[in-house]
Image 1 (tube, rainbow, N blue to C red):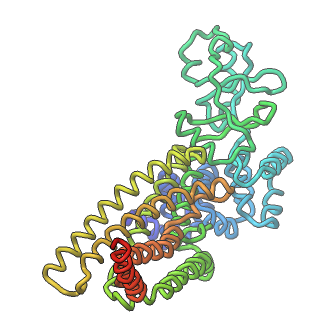
Image 2: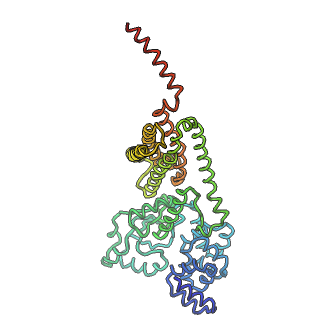
Length: 479
């Protein structure tokens, strides 16, 4: 890459546009895209210099901020060429990101037919499959023979997004079946298309969410899938390259949300600093306010900490263990939901597994915590004379906190999904904050039970006095 940049820089310095055009046209599309990333200020020049066909192929794989920057700086003639030659799905993706006034100007470059098509595609919901589809496909009739189909492909295949799959239509454009091109190429030319149909049709609805398309593509190993309306009329197709792009955006967005921030609309290094802060500050404030409840909880148990200071030593241990188990469970469930492995209907199976796994994990950590205090107390008096009670308190608290963290982390994504929210919103920091507060309550509640006589000496003395007074009476009664 460094050598390529050096050669391009030399050509730019010499202002040799002829050699620059020849050099760029001989590069792979991905290499030109990398050059635009490395030399962003020369991106518009590269798009102007490339042949139109190659410029379109480079432009369509650029991220939106780069596309927007280039469109503003290239000539009107090249803009018109790009907009007209872009596949409908890529054109729709670009228009959906631009401001309305910019779309209005760009759409004027289109032919009346393409303009109508673009407006129709933009009419679908932003995250629907209709926004991804392209109307460029090969469709045939079931009564045709293979010879006629091949002639049709040679005539119209150049304008199709893909010819790997041929679509069979009935009356009024109703989709009957799809046939892979290899099945057509390997049979006798006189074979009727109806003889090749097997009825195993998989289609998407234009109004379906894009997330469903990702799962269907993954499960069925397809390069393209047809898109129909409610009457099963073929509207267009969605190809796997668009699905991979959407899947990458979904993955990136979910990872950012899991990290406790709003999804970024632009690459990290391109986004405005103040916009970046705005994306992050909201969640930070929410999490900060949540963590303030931790201080409230600690204040409520201040007397217990004052009596047995050693209890405070293990607060970070208890809090982090619960938060870690909750974050683990939340991340696993969010990923399983994204892959279609878990649905809201599976909530009981998930809860049952997390009850068992959380209990086992808690026991393991509890045993480690118990022996750690026990062994340490053999060499030190830091935990005081009540070290054994503290060891039991920490051990049982770890079991409770880790179990609760696992349950909370696994159930929150399912609850949010049920409420119609994004499961990724139950991010690791959010789960950790929730478990921090409740973990403190669990810890000190267990401490109050196990170390009751030490933490509440007045109550213990009162109980002892009652028992002491009852013994003589019981003895006198027996006499």
